[in-house]
Image 1 (tube, rainbow, N blue to C red):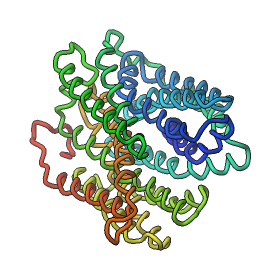
Image 2: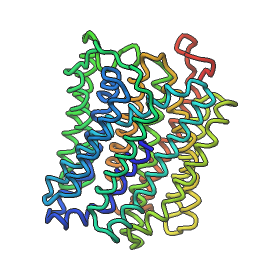
Image 3: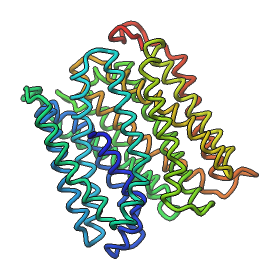
Image 4: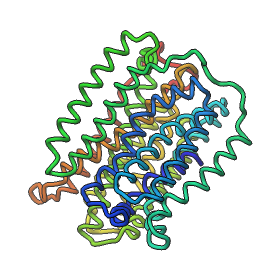
Amino acid sequence: MVQFVDVLGVTSVVTAIPAMLDGVGADDSLAGLVATAYAMFFGGLLVLGSRLGQKYGRRRTLLAGLTTLIIASAIGALATAGWQLVVARSLQGVASALSVPAALGLMLASVPDEEVRGQALALWSAAGATAGALGFIVGGVLTDLLGWPAIFWINIPVSIVLALGVTSTVSAAPDRIPGLSLDVPGAAILTTSVMALVLGSAFLEHGSTRHIGFMTIAAGCAGILLLVQWLRHAREPIIPLAAVRLRRLSIGTIGSFVNTATTSSAGVLLTLYLQREQGLGPFMTGLLLLPISIAVIAGSALAAPAMRRFKRRFVIGCGLGLIAIGNLAAAMALGSNPALVVALLAIGLGLGLSSVACNDIGTDVPEEHTPTAIGLLNTSAQLGTALGVGALVLIASPSAYGQISGTAFALAMTAVLAGLTAFSLARWTPSPDQLVGANTG
């Protein structure tokens, strides 16, 4: 439920941004920042959020995240100026950075059995995917019926119910490491670098700010290089090098990045195409994209039995292969909505398979590295969305590549990326000393 609420809070706002800006008398130029602020703080603070869960306890950190979400929602619902919307969205990102890794960590700690763990991760992925697609529809309905503040107001009672559920069902047993260092310098470098990458990707979407986008992304990359040097010398680095060297975590992180880079970007491209080229409204666009979430639920359900029969790298490869086929089919189906629905079903099925397997293999690490793994997996997924959307909107901006539309060409590029990653994982054989557990990945 925490995963569902957090993801729903992302996508439900997207369709309401024009109404929000009109409601507070803000200029359309603020739309990008309202949309990006959440991802900046969520992606930038995820690893730190995982570390806070280690230091102060996951249950306590989860409750802090839900409390922050209540405060952020109140600020957003009562906003009378554009900057207040930006503050609200930023605080929502902070809330998710605290609550998502804590919730996932608590869930994994409660299901030590490998088979049940796979089922739990399947539910986690299905909840996120379902909320991702339903958010577009929910946002449109709430805005039309009750006005845009309802999108923020609804989070308050839901968060209170979740907090009560956590306090009554989750054990208060100590699960923290009191003397653990937060590595403030490392956390600051990591947060700033991720935020720069996300913000730079948003700038790429508009021709007038693309030069700023490239410079901001370059600054983010420089920050990552600085972070690598810091991690080598810090006493208790925010990302332990021992965790970074784990091959399974690398596979899960790469897979998570490609999953969102090739599916979230495709969703944005198709949303723009359906509204600009076909003239559909937000509600009908969300309804047409709904097959992705339906198929993700099916793919997530198939992932656990598939991982019992095949190596997880193979399941990830199959999922990415389906994403590649779906994106290529979508590029060829533009103009035919029935054919597009079939392509979306393939994308969703592949995403369900791959995301569950990526989370499973990425978190199958020694217990002391689990919080780091959770943070890195979620951060890579956020970066995949931000960088994928920014790059592909840039690729799709020319009106045509010969006889091929820019949208179709960009979708074909996502198919190439997913296909190449699937092929690389199929050829990547982990060495025995990198493996943990019975399922060799």
